[in-house]
Image (cartoon, rainbow, N blue to C red; front, side):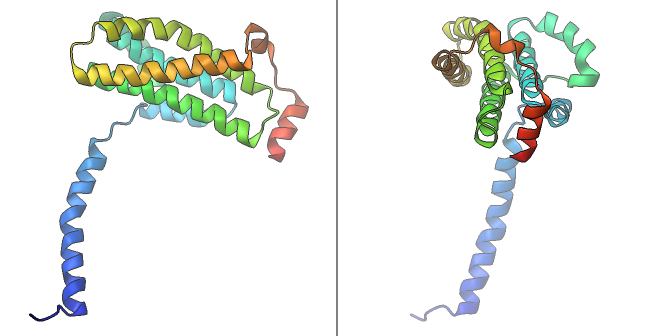
Length: 195
């Protein structure tokens, strides 16, 4: 049997790559963006950690409202549509969004802690997020108890796990309402710019 030449091997690799590209492109297209375009802009526009955290909180709460009270969510969406965008998706997709949004909020806080561990906004942002999950977690638990579809249950499990991790982190660090009084001073802004 003849051994394939380098040209034949290269041609075969190119064919394999060309055949697999549409498969990977369709897999990427199936990935869901957990924020609306408007919410992404709000995240970009709000560079201070506490304000950015507030955007993530509202985005997660908007999706939870869409799952728990679609009529009320539709009314609220009409008011928020221009600034926040329209929340769309199945229940499982909206629950996925909540999980991803909470996770992204945690990543933002962690990233800020790495770059500026002395930032006065770290504790404030973690407190804000922990207060939000304190409101969100009981609703997620109720939804999980009544989940009929496995995809919903899986997304709820992820969201609940992330919410519990946030609550645990806040307890471990002893964040409290006093942290909300944190203001950014000129010194802390200078420190932030230096990092």
